[in-house]
Length: 109
Image (tube, rainbow, N blue to C red; front, side, top):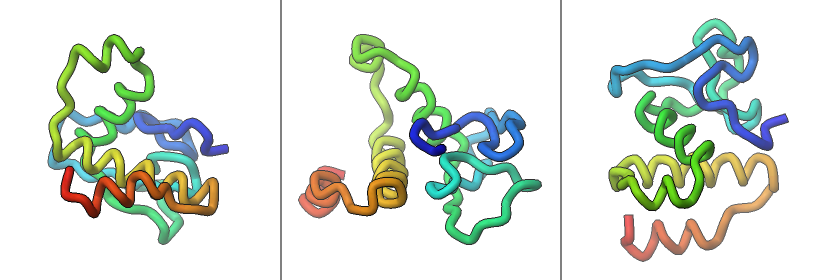
């Protein structure tokens, strides 16, 4: 249903999407609830995201706060993940996260 985004498998068919190459782009659909493989790509609302961004997002989603505090997420990855969160919330809640808009406009990222 998209409430817990699928980031390492295709949300439609379940095929693994992991890649060690950070240059690989994977389609992400907020409407469908996660990553979409090339075979299942049918929607125009997808955005292309680096596989490294989705890997980090998956790790963050599955980790405890203590685990997250012990690692440093690269700044550009954090920025991309926040944009994914914003798109996902906009799709499922129907509104923008004003706190993220503030972060983007104040120059923290």
